[in-house]
Each structure stands twice: as structure tokens, then as C-alpha cells.
Image (cartoon, rainbow, N blue to C red; front, side, top):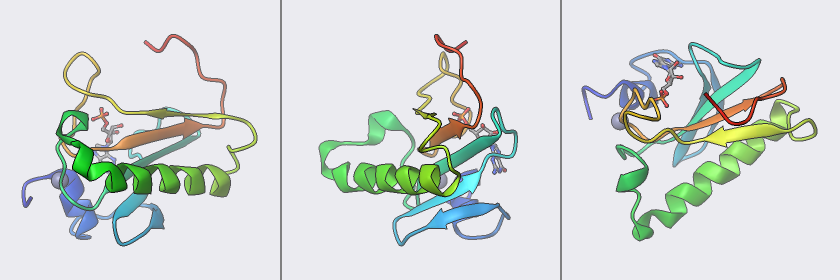
Length: 114
Ligand code: 5GP
Ligand code: ZN
């Protein structure tokens, strides 16, 4: 989608600090990090959000999870702990309508989240 921010990152029209890449998914550092490690894992294909992930898309989700595991290991937070978050809709503060998995770590994370 031409007017989607994350599609523009996928097509390299907007630069990003890429941490991992596969044919199906991309991981890059969040521009406004909420923790010392804050990486976004996205599908390269435009999917608006969690509610658009139907059962036929289970491979996309599996690829994203596998990439999140790789990111956690690369960033050294597999040992200390980390949080994976999908924000969905207004109350969760979803700002970008392209599915993304936040991978946060390298500090103690409060629970419940704000
Ligand atoms: P949401 O609030 O939709 O769950 O998360 C969107 C995330 O995208 C936010 O954490 C925000 O900081 C990040 N973000 C917004 N614009 C950009 C950008 O241009 N580049 C990068 N790397 N991250 C962005
Ligand atoms: Zn998109």
C-alpha cells in the first residue's frame, strides 16, 4: 500500500534500522523506543491489524514469532526476559495500521501495562 508507513519501510522508501529480514517479514528498531530494546516485527505483506489475520494467515504469524525469537536471541534478552505486544485499535493505542509485533526488553517491564 503506497500510503502505508510500514509498507514504505518494507520497500526501503523510508529508512529503518533493520535487525532481521526474511522473505516474509522484517524487524526494525522503533523510532521512539519504550525500552532499551524495542523492535517491531512486521509482515512484508500489508495486513492492517490483528483482526485481519484470518486462519489462512497462520504462516505469517508463525514467521513473525520465529523472527521475534531471533531478535530476542540477537539482542540478548532471551535470557533476561522480554515482552511481545500487539496493539489493536484505539484503546490499545494502535497508531500504524500495518500489523506489527512490539518486542520490548532490557529493563524490568511493569505489569499491568498502562
Ligand atoms: P502502535 O502504537 O501502532 O502499536 O505502534 C507503532 C509504533 O511505530 C510506535 O511505537 C512508533 O514509535 C513506531 N513508529 C512510528 N513511525 C515510525 C517510523 O517512521 N519508523 C520507525 N522505525 N518506527 C516508527
Ligand atoms: Zn502496510
